[in-house]
Length: 245
Length: 158
Image (cartoon, rainbow over all chains, first blue to last red; front, top):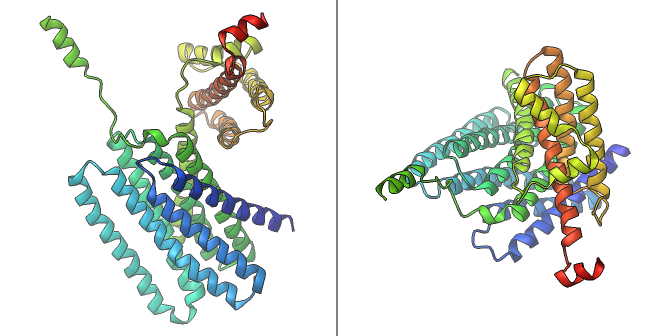
């Protein structure tokens, strides 16, 4: 009972924050509006509303709920992958050469994920909604997590001054790491009830965590999003100038 | 099965990594001046002297006292965060996250102490959280004291 209250609290709290963030981002007249975040937030909110409605109307054990759950989860997972790709684009905004290289790798990784999942699908054709879904989601979440970590390292490498992007990336890391771990646990324990409830709870907590970090990033750190690399202080030039005088 | 176990271990590690990085990014916030000094003086907090001694002389000797100092400062600052010049009388989201981070680092300090690995790093992280809290409290107090006060209002109140 307590678990379900917490779970509902996290779910509806998350939906409220999603709606508030969407309104805030849409209303802000900031030039560098994070549209990739907006897109993902819309997907999250739409899937949350659809799931809640079906849950209340048909119940947790109904076929309708499971169909709606999987139907909304698929675009959610794909949009997550898309979000990370857009973050890569933002990180390489002023570095076209690097972006060309990164784009090639991103395409290759996406093809790899689809290929591996397709291979698994061909072996588990009868259990699309259980085995295939868990495998596919775990693969995509883990891929997003790895890509996100690579993006974080890239930001450190290029010494990016885009603090907002740094925090957005951290939020995404929290969102993907939790579900990837619990989905793997689900697979290891062969869908144990404990693992199922843990998975559901962790997903909601991680989503809420990501939303709070994003809210902080969008509201407090939005002004610094335009700069891409840190401005270097021309120490040498100053010294030379001084000597000339 | 091996792949799933690998995913589980790596994902869990990455979760904690991102949690830590997020907290450190929040802690890196620049304040327009050092507000924490006045709060430290007014409440006789000990974390700046602790950090100074750690940076100058290496690891502290008296571990139980160190724990007590950090805990007392943390309790005082979290109380002030909630009650001093705070109209809502509650923590903000980033403060909640940092409180969680402090508790996590406090636990990690005990483990590091046991293993004798990176103890100094954990103490410095703990003091940086305390400094952030003191800065936030100092900034709030400063805003309330001088927020809507013009020079004429100030002189009239004297």
